[in-house]
Image 1: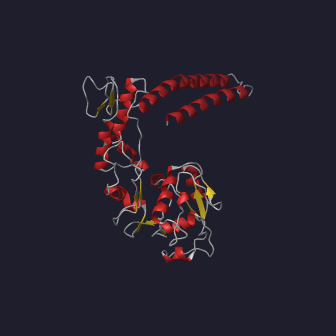
Image 2: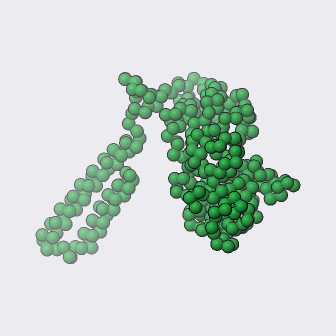
Image 3: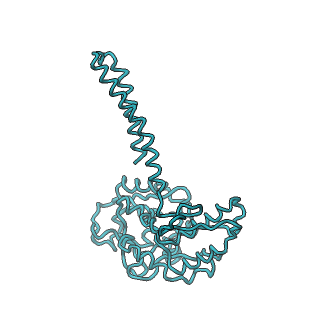
Length: 337
């Protein structure tokens, strides 16, 4: 329905562990009084196969919010929280984000898990998950603010970037609009970069890591569901980059405003200069020009053959040559797009 399907961590635990196998189950209908499905309408559970960060996230969330215990015997078990687990055989293998999308799209009564941005981009219907304040909402309804709100409790953060981040998790944090499964992506970099022979590559690695905290760069990733981390996390991370032993490599500079006479120098990463996409488009255009001339010549030959009355006799050769010319042009057009 328009209001969506309400779910809790404990209900999801039972569904993903094949304890609840039908959508008209009394416990599902108890929090979805308007749910109207046929009696015994089966649930198709899609899950990943190989090691997956999505599996790691969902299983840790389920155990954190609904652990198996004497009080909750059907909660999520301790031994099933990992990037790869032994799933109930009644579930269905859908490995990879694309395969998971197809599993959900192509099977009636399907439920699965996928990064929010991928699911929204594919037009899949989200369930409305119960958050820490007892509010049912989707990740789209929570928005960027609801995801960032989950990371306001920074008590588990280490004091330094080379500390222990294993306890940092944002599940069911308080707030009416807070999304209950918010994650932080990590980049691990060795402090001693001497194993990288090129000094320029060492400093380029640092420049890349620095850009992850620059809105002009990380902002390009919002379509994939990545948003900037809180300021405190950013500060710890940038301080951590100062711990890197770069050797004698020259630092890279980001050109955001035009740097006359220097913007195209070495060790400059520029927003103002020609992108590789435009360069590649120009290169492909250069490749098309001689092929277009080949097609023109073929058309002239065809016109000459027609004028000489040999059109039908040369049909096989003519058709094969013309098909090759058009095929090459179509292929280049697709590559250019």
